[in-house]
Length: 573
Image (tube, rainbow, N blue to C red; front, top):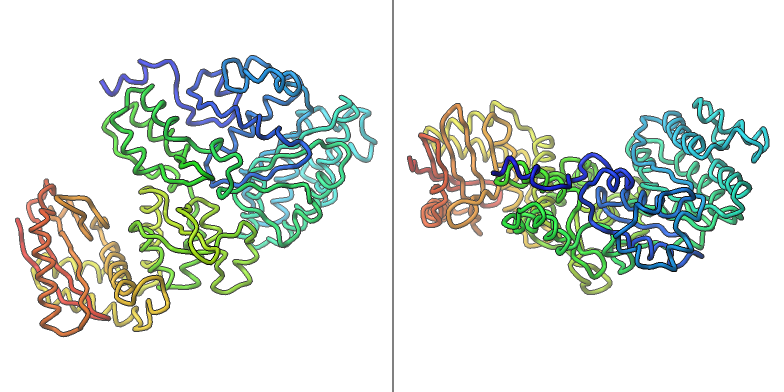
């Protein structure tokens, strides 16, 4: 039955489009967010910058706003939607405004000249759509700017004045001020930071937005979306009428992302009510204002897959499209100190940090050990806020299992690249474990500890020295094991709990269950006792019960103390 679910329902899920008219005209399943329009128009004296994590419905909402406002847009697109009952608002604004719409999310340039060309082309295509640059609404010299942009021969001044010129032409044509909509305005700035031409791009955007929005008599107001506010470099210099709304604010809080009720309605429509618990565990947990929201990108893709295979396991949809640059940047600066925090968050822990929407990419570049990286991770969606702590701080956590797995994956990837590990060392360790040679396995791990761990690791980090060292030891051993042909999974659910490390190898037809303990003393006898306790926990919690399909199953107990370990091994099968 599960292979025919899609055919039983009229509406497909919008996997490949974020264009509102396409979603409506194509009969796709649509979560009605049209009341976003009413809130966006509630104060037209201010421009609005709405900050949300990536893949959180920004593009579809901006496309919907454009379709509602723009002169000539078909009004039937909104029939039956929540906004349609607000007759006065619809009469005053629907299909009544000239609109300038720019989506900058796909600009990915390796240097500034390439970025300038890409931005020029996007703006010139919008001018072509609006039929600007060819008539008598602008002077010949002004029209020439758009010709140069279309041929990717524009100079910086052409780009800086482009939105202002388009708005001027629209005002002369319609006798009305334009509304400017810019989706993912900060995507080119992020790319510039990553590729090393940040200063040039910041200056360009300061001119572009300044001329477009500061004292421009041809623009009514603007709505911009993005992930981060770029402020200290004066990109918004002098634009006092821009109001910024982040995940900390109640405004717009339910319009981006899905509420629990909206997700329940979606899975109910497709007959997947039994998968609601998976949706909540993997994709829920983002606190936006006073709402708890689901990641829409992941929910839609998970639901689409489950429609085709009702028993399909949840996957990392958002995380697999996200850059791990922020996590790697932090680990590159703070090493194992940051690693302890990341691992703690990956295991469901919380941290208290100040959150500022004013942090910038420049803060990351100029301030060693900058707390700005936590602001960036919060704005990007790796972290969400639980509540306010003391001294103006917020309690932060990873929102759901998808993000916790992403953090764990990023931490492990960094640990593997930062340590002197080879596939040969990993193979030696697995050979020793399969041969039940505990002393040889200990030597392989202890040698790595000596080269990597410092007795200072974890001292000034979140949690106790013991807790930090234990997390470090776990990541180091996991990184070593992962440099092999074996599949290695942390915190694998099995039996009556979670296995610290589960290693499987189809070719070797073997599985290794590893439980870890930490000893307060490095006394050899005490370590041996702790290693046996770990073996006992594997049996007591029935960790090996659900491990099937392998001829060999081995239980391994590892006890850590500072920079050494003891190992106990027991063959279960």
